Image 1 (cartoon, rainbow, N blue to C red):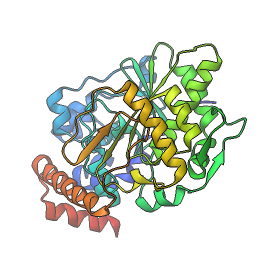
Image 2: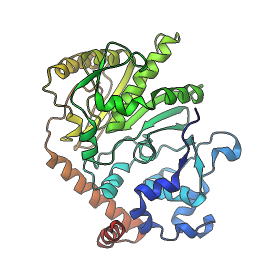
Image 3: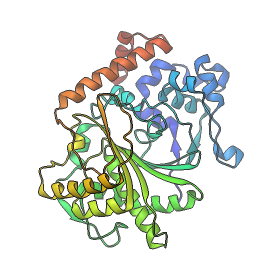
Image 4: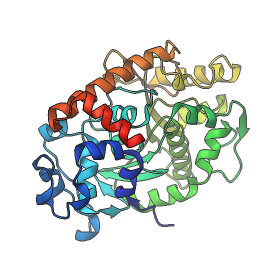
Length: 362
């Protein structure tokens, strides 16, 4: 099965239309790079479809450029080139996707967290659907999209557990929350086939935000299980999740401890990272299994600002608070910071920016 092709023009229209109108009103008429605003011309010059050269490419962006321009500017530069591709390369860029999500979706879930600089979630998980393969240097990122709102996440997380089927690709015995099984079942085998086709000589990292983090864990677990069944006895999948809910029972926790190397990041007080309720007996057992594994193989924690927290665990520890107010404070900070950046680099005041958003939303 061929990998899904990604049309960034459609993605921009779907998620970034308000920002696109503010930042680049002439984008539709920009058939040549020279007609774009000077601030974006260098970025546009870096974008080349992999098909043109018949091989994969990395696009090396200078560090000062990365910190000056946000992901939406990079996406708009792609739009100007009318680029369509299925497997693309990106530089390790400074992550600002969560602040962008907060602007576009009015979303509070983990808004404002400072993600690791080399993380590619900003170009994957919040725009691409449902799972996209991204190559950066010697790593193939398998990025699973999250949901677009808190209500979507709460709706999809079913409290009751379901035994995984024989043909699911997951190790048994194990029970997984129904919503996550539903999210991953329609794509599991096709995505693993694509990974096996495209990952020769590459490291593979599964990553995702919110629901995508749960899917990434199940994908990574299934891939490691498949590799071991093919004779790679010591294979362990690498998984990075952001604001991910818990996904299963103690049996699943044992498989995760054995088959994936999981780094879980979340913002203190994020309610989704505490779903389902950790008071459930099954999840208390699951937490103990994962905590034992984490203590045995702990590594240095990633550095996050005081509002965030990183754990080298497998969903072992809930955030210390479940109050939504903490997330709201972070979201307000993210919105203020993003509006200030627009004013600095694009000449739009916060008032004008917010007015433009209201007009775009009708």
